[in-house]
Image (cartoon, rainbow, N blue to C red; front, side):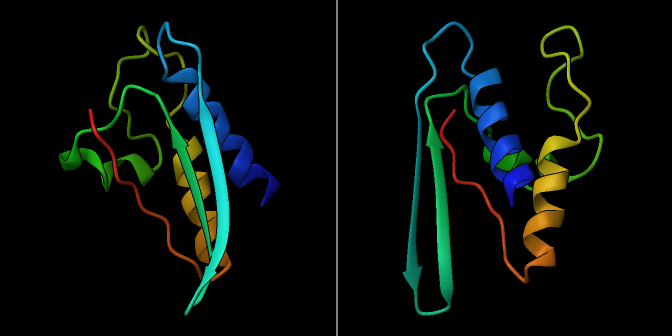
Length: 93
C-alpha cells in the first residue's frame, strides 16, 4: 500500500508542469468497502487513454518530455488488484 500511494503522489507531482502541485487524498467507506481518492491539479489524461495508463511500459509522453519508465501506474494496479480492489481514473485535460 505504501508503494501505491508513493507512485500516485509521485505521478501527480511529476505531471503538474510548471504549476505548484496540489494533491488531495481522501478515504471513506461505501457499501462495498474502502474507497481511496487522489486528486491533483496536473495536466490531465484524455479519456481514450484511461485504460492504457495502467499497462506496464505504456507511456503517453516521450522520454524527453517526462523521463520515466511507464511502470508506476501498472504497479498501482497490481497492488490494488492483489487486495481484491479496483483502480480507475476520471480526468479532465
